[in-house]
Length: 186
Image (cartoon, rainbow, N blue to C red; front, top):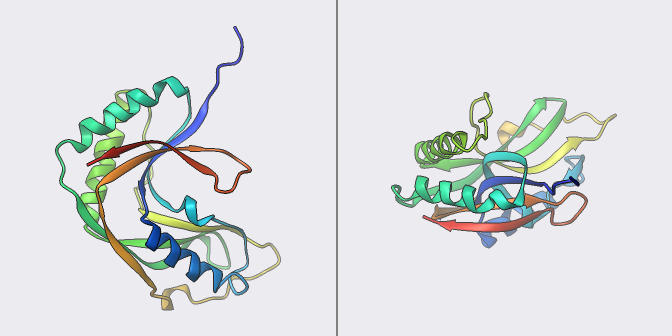
């Protein structure tokens, strides 16, 4: 038996184009000040709901059906991209992110329902708390010290209605890196 193809996939809330542009403009203005090694391509902005990892492509329909079961009972809800922060050490952060505000309980409940439904398919949820965010940049440059007072920055990028979920495939070393392979409407 030969190698079975695997796709690295995840489920996410897509970001509307106007908000992607606002995020990208904000990042472009700070690339020199915030010296991260890798800036996320604007087409790759999203809010991860669940990372599924290396998965056989023939399971995408099954995963899509699970998502449809979850969202059949919910109503669209409103969220906003605003504020920013970092993950990792304050002076050498791993990630620069934009925050998510609005109907966060609805977003968290949706994420919980997705992970519980996908558990039935054999996908084990992460055991750390869900912290919705939009990754903007990764890996602060070594030898540099991140000295920005990130708590003082309170940008507002815009709000939108969550009315769809997307299954993305990661294609390493490409720009943009994420390919939409399915979209499920709420």
